[in-house]
Image (cartoon, rainbow, N blue to C red; front, side):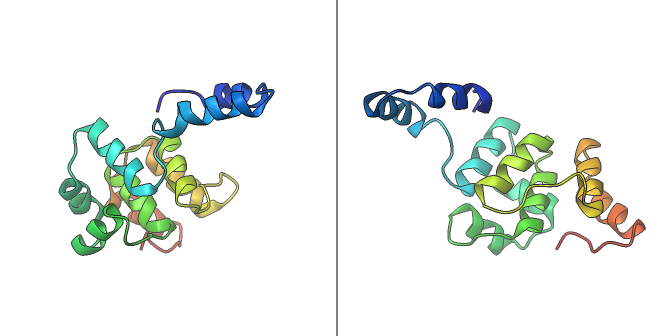
Length: 142
């Protein structure tokens, strides 16, 4: 998961025929997670955390977390953000999780999103994020 998207985009755009396209697709096939649960598992492994650790720190129901992790449930945006906060993901990692799940990425021009971006940058925990949101009159992560 270390290739820059811009480098991959350049390589893809310089592809001149379907044989090169097939080669490119083969190179990336197993290199990048295809679904949210695979991505979260990779992040957990990188950070030396277990699913149980993430569940406790996220405040998300245990059964629901395990359904997300086995791919049987698709979480909403706030749940993904809560998992990202629990895993102490950096902002680009959180944004990628949101993209994979086809949820809107955090947007700096949105006040609530700006608070969440700030909280992620400061490595706040769920209680801290929700307290910050409440201080500014926004709903907590649900």
